[in-house]
Length: 237
Image (cartoon, rainbow, N blue to C red; front, side, top):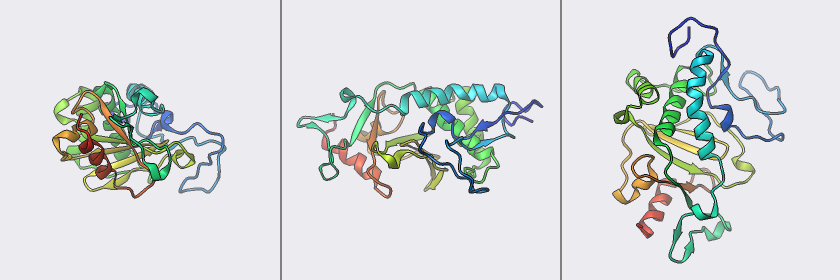
């Protein structure tokens, strides 16, 4: 039984985190909880019990767009600027604080985030399973099936520096009222409740302004929200 269309069909190998968001590198080894066998390339975590091929393709349009928009390294003209030039973190070398994604398709990115939550909630794969209440589970479907804008999630996007530490995909991490997914250097923070930010920081939340500001995280444990606010408060324009 397909868990999306509720029809009895042949089910497919449905990736929870889309294959397009996995790193493309022959140097990466993949491990699972059930086996220490190493594969020459990560095939990703998939579930054979949740989606038929048709429903998987429907969600794939969100996945394809997310990979197209979120994965590419920013161009120089998209880097966040201020009067004295590009904003850099001097102690870490020439690593830029942030860059703009200009006018992204918010409907498709919201659909991607919602379908990512939905797949993680309905899968039985322990490596990547999350717990969602029924109301939030139904909300995910209203977003990716109906584009119900009143159900949109607050989403913040981060980016790891381009180095070996960004070449991995992690299972979702539960935050305070949110879930965090790391996919090939892209860190997606999906908040279940409205994420309070000062008005001048609205550019950090997907959909509050036409463009999205993506900040770099130098290492795990950094307080990215404080860094983002620091960027915006220094120059509100």
